[in-house]
Image (cartoon, rainbow, N blue to C red; front, side, top):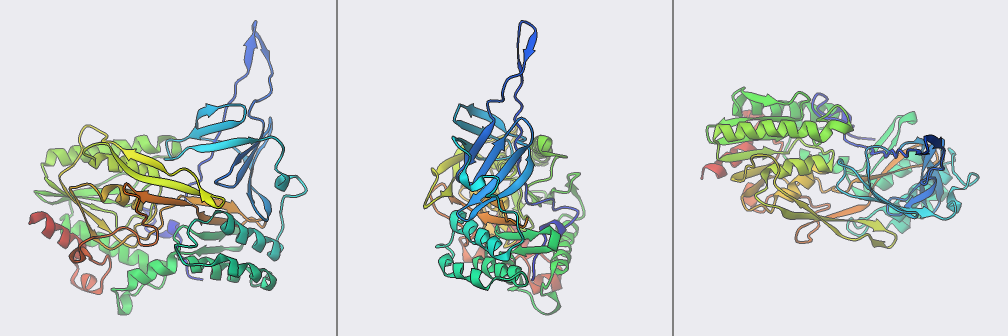
Length: 465
């Protein structure tokens, strides 16, 4: 199996790319006449998030997170704590919560009775390959949003259950997830050292399309080496060795010349030491960058997200806000819900900070720009002063929905559809240059041979004309 472990790519600059947001509710006791009376927690019971296929069981002791599909129920977290979320609305039968680290609200509906799939004797905890295949196939059948778009008839593969054995279980699962070519679909079984990334072969194919000979990428090390070589060329030859980088190595910035600034956004998370200070730490860095841009007097800017393999959507949106001329509806999002979808909700981005750069901007993109990096591109592409140069992004926008199989393996699924302000969906195709003359490969044999970056060269050419 060939897979790129995102946590191994650019180990000094790329942070954890898959974030599980947990919620923690604190309910205090009430007092009467200086006597503290214990009361039952009003949140106790079972709550359903239908679009995510989650059931949360709150008790006075240990809370449990289950994931459900048509085949049954499995435990995702047996000591679940709800953290980092703010309650927006609480009623007897509904909870709506949000988080600074999520652009969406979470809606939970109280279940009158415990879901029959999650009765104690119905919860699946087993290594049986056929039971695990049933859960795997149904997780996708129930929640995956892009079978039609990716031209995959999932129903054809349910019968593979009869062929599944302990020995070939992950081989069969790998064949199925690779059919999707989806950068947000994965299977991870840490106990058995299994990591299958559905989108990796397609990304490697695209990165290799302009490489030859010894430069062809065959493994993670090759990708890291070429990426680092590219970064060295940028900072030494284009920034003349003079640049700034934040202490957690997420954003690098400097000047191409006295009129053109350069910002390389390497990751969309890991700016803080934990979730609690992620956005505050990010915005301190952004304040510094924008102050530097303003004081430098540059009137043109290159923003580079070619190395950016994603992270947290709200990090991307906070960065976008520093380049907004006015509040704009930037995108829409909906999630699969049964045979339909949730409400298609609009999301706006407004200017933020003391200074916003709203003059000529070139945005550099590549096949390695994925997830939250693509959301950044989605929000930036329609600004009248932004031009895209490079290659189309990976085409994987959805927040990853994680479910756990009965054997403990984690399955990542794309269940959300993002669209731009006009309603156009860029899943699969990604976001890239409209003008063919601006289609410049991220990696090319000629660039490495000549020690140059054709993407930056094209950006400078456009900005100086």
